[in-house]
Length: 87
Image (spheres, one colour):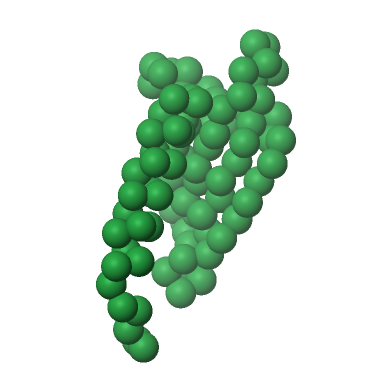
């Protein structure tokens, strides 16, 4: 996906589903959004990281999000091999 199309998708489109979770001790909200482009009907995903005064957005087409999801799952599976500390 080109940079201009990605920027357009970050700020436009219809939100179909949104899941928020907090990180950094509650200081940052990570927002995962399934969106639909109004003109083409294409579905895509936007990941937003929102902290006090700082917003970062990433737009994924289906293939990019699929690759990202597989990478997250690989790290998640690797993390399961290590014991969780009490801290």
